[in-house]
Amino acid sequence: MDKLILTCAVTGSATVPTQSPYIPISPEQIAADALACAELGASAIHIHARDPKNGKPSADPRLMKQIAQTIKAKSEVIVGISTGGGIGMTPAERLEPARICEPELASFNLGTMNFSLHTAARHFAQEDYLYDWEEEHLKGSKRFIFRNTFEDMELFAQTMKAKNIKPEFEAYDLGHLHNLKFLEKTGFAEPPYWIQFVLGVLGGLSASPESLVMMVQTANQLFGKEHYRFSVIGVGYPMQFRLAATALAMGGHVRVGLEDNIFIRRGQLASNSQMVEKVLRLAQELERELASPSEARALLGLKGLSAVAY
Ligand code: KMH
Ligand code: ZN
Image (cartoon, rainbow, N blue to C red):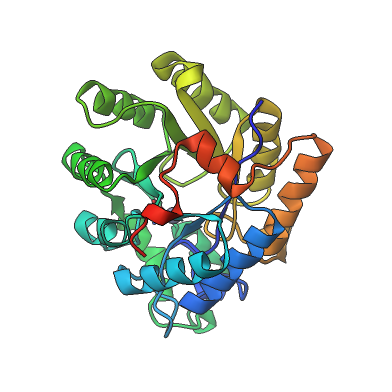
C-alpha cells in the first residue's frame, strides 16, 4: 500500500469569508496556511487565489504566482494550482495561472456539471454577509454551469502537456471517468493517472462510501488498478473525514481543507491545520505512513520544483 499523499486545499473558490473566519484570503494568509500544513506533514497543497480586499475568488495570475513563490521559498511541499478558478471565470482565465506558473501539478476538471452552493445561503440573512459579493455568489450558483467541454479539456490537456504539468484529474461523477477514458483514446491523456474523486458537490455524486466504491470499481474497469492512483475529497462535514478514513483503509489518498469543508466537528469551525491534524490522527490509528513531498513526487512522477516557472 502506498504511503499516504495528503493534500490540503486551503481556500478554494466556493466558500465565502462569512462562512468561516479561518478561510485564508490574502496571498500572505493563503501561503501561511499552506506552510503550516506542510510543516504538519501535508505532501501537497492545492491553491486558489482570492482578492485580498474582499476575499472574492480571483483569476489574477499574479496573486497565484505570489502564493506559489511564497510557499516555494520556505518549503519543498508540492504546490497544485487550480484551473477550476471560480464562478464566472472563462476556461481560458481559469487556465492562465497554471499556464504562467508551470507548476508540477494542476487540477483538470473532467466534465461540465451543475456546481451549486445555494443551500449554504440558508444559514445567513442579508445583513450577515461581510462583503457585498457573497450572497449572490451563493444564491446565484443555482444558475452556475461549471463548464468543462471536450474542447476546453483538449486545451487544458495540450497546455499542461506542453508545460510538463501533471494533471490532477477532478472526477465528480462516474461519467467523468468515462470522459478521461475518451481523452486517453483520443491522445489527450496518458496513464498513470492521479485522480481526485470529489464526492458531495451538489451536481455531482453524493459523499458516501457507496459512491466511492462505484468510482473505484469504474476506474479499475476503465484504467486498471495499476494505471492510476486515487485521492478522495469528501465535501462537507462529517463526510470529509469519514471518506478520508475510508480512503485510508482502501489504500487511497486524502484531500482535506477549507476549500471543501469548514467544520472539524459538528458545528465547530476550524482551521486548515486542525483539519490536517485530524487526518494525521486517523492515519496514525490506521497505520498509514505519510509520504514526504519527495516521496509523493516519485509516486506521481512530478517534474520537480526546479522546473516550475515561479
Ligand atoms: N471552483 C470550483 C467550481 C478545481 O480547483 O479545479 C471547482 C474547483 C476545482 O475549484
Ligand atoms: Zn480547487
